[in-house]
Length: 238
Length: 305
Image 1 (tube, helix red, strand yellow):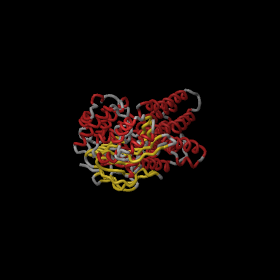
Image 2 (tube, chains in turn cyan, blue; image 1 turned 90 degrees about the vertical axis):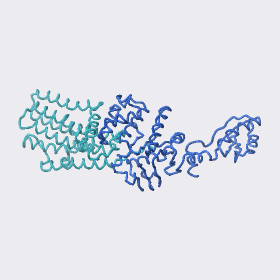
Image 3 (cartoon, chains in turn blue, green; image 1 turned 90 degrees about the horizontal axis):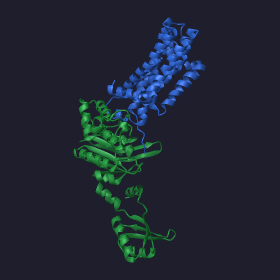
Image 4 (tube, chains in turn brown, cyan; image 1 turned 180 degrees about the horizontal axis):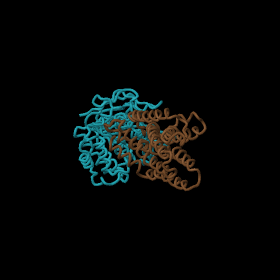
């Protein structure tokens, strides 16, 4: 961790319009949950729909994308990353610091609202609220690492990230059983199920597969991002 | 005392060769890297500052490879061409952050010293996003100087500066050169380079065209034959009068253009000769235009020399 890198990253991420944008998703989740909690529908069904599909399935990957790319892709894009890189700083320290900021912010704007929404919708019953919260914690960390890596390796990180989150996880994940095995969202679901108990949350991937895969993706993305950052080439403007 | 050595370096991007087998060594004092736009100056500076790997050859600082070697930044200060620099920070916050990132023992004192050096202390509490181009350039300088580097690399530092800012920056760079630091800056403007650098490296189309004292290079550039297109009230009589003088080596009467194509030996001699000859012969000059004054033609002349 480097405190200066963390400070610059956090200010860049929360400053300007992006900061406000990051509050829209959790606000939306809480408002919908508050309305749903008063409805007469099946509370369990509603909770799974809202926390499973809307939150874990859509809001968390989008927040992860905005935050994960926001902590580095913007700087690489406008060239200000030069000021971090022209320093005798180990590249892995820059990456781990930025990852820590990304994970911290993701947890704040995704996991905390998830817990609150879960409590609103379903109380503490069956550990559903806690289950989804833990799922958002682990998925949020994995998304952050993956999207941060995308920010380092491609100038089109947001497009690539959207393609992964929306096309692969949501579209293919819905129709193709096999696609779910390689999906951060599904791994998060497996963890949620393990925390909440068998029947409360359905998951397609076993915990035994999900946990190692989450770890591998997070660690591998971080290592690869560090290596790629060390060899970052500035495009010549000529 | 620090020396950057570029040894048989080439860099290509796909099929395009940006830098072609260049060998040069940049030592203490001020060196100007001169060349037209697109000549490969930025590519060279990117390689010297560790942001681009040479495709072949080696770029070293006192023997240590620069690419993928973060330790070189203890000695190198870099002023990039691009302007973005964390617009949401004030000048003070920006320079202080740079000092902290270098791991300096007293970052606050170092940042203050650097801002004083570039005379930006008065605006240090304003956001860098609100700065003028010259102010940004100076704060970028402060950030590059904050760790007291022995090498300073500047990519087109005078671009977009007004004359006063230009003079200020030149004065600052002169001081660094006099301190025995290795200062390298790139420019595509000959006058800029010759005002500041005694030593010049010229790059044209990716090749190393010339190297050495600016006076010699200046002479190479001005002593070349100059071509002019001249229209007058009596072209043939003017041609006869001009060819009698030693300043011209060739005159062609271009019937279609209704003009004279004149090749002059030296610039100074010809520009005083032409009006004098015309006046004495009672000939009116309608057009006098240099046919090859573009920077590119000057450079291509240098390459063939």
